Image (cartoon, rainbow, N blue to C red; front, side):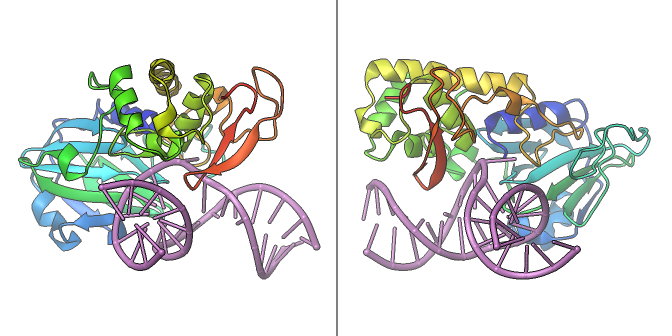
Length: 290
DNA sequence: ACCTCGACCTGGGCGC
DNA sequence: TGCGCCCAGGTCGAGG
């Protein structure tokens, strides 16, 4: 689920609430997603620290604490929601599948594995159905990009057509697989890669090293275009995604090719093809993408 | 050094 | 209604 626009949507939605809050207690119901250090030390290490700011590199969320970085990756189904018990439930806005209210009232259920509790009785809940998410706690001296082997975030100044072209030249794998490599570009996933490749007219199976300089220029623009659109639409909600307040995104309504194989191409009307590229299901147009 | 593949999980949708 | 199969936004590590 969560690619760069979804993770950024979560970050932005939590920004009004978390910075300045002090972590009073940590409730761990299922330590499955906690990587390092051992989860038993979390209450001791996190308790009493306050949250300075919230940052993001690619799909990685970074809680900047006084003495640590709390690194949270949402995996496929991770959700972070802020609960304020003083806010009213809004019964008319329940998620059609999960039943979760679209307010600040994310109730603890069997998938809510970790909660950070604050002195004002509000809390940050981590819910993750498939448990592919990961929590890590590292020292503030850590270089997060280096530590997690993350490449360039496309929404930063390090990302430009020249960087893209040079990076694409280095691999003979399919261009789609290269774009999904988080140590090259941090933040793209299956949805936005398919969308960007369609927008720039490039087949996902083309050899990465065979993408021309001119195509890289178009592709760089398309990547930014689809990511910004996703962000503007509050992320793509296929099943589970919601922001920190429980709101679904609506970018799924703007996807042109992802998951639409068999349907007519929005540009030429010939049916979109489906194939497996880099181990991921891909949707593309044999006419519009070369 | 590179790449492909399966594993890690749970749940939804579909065909029978 | 129920079972079994396939599929899903993402990494990771083992092995070729």
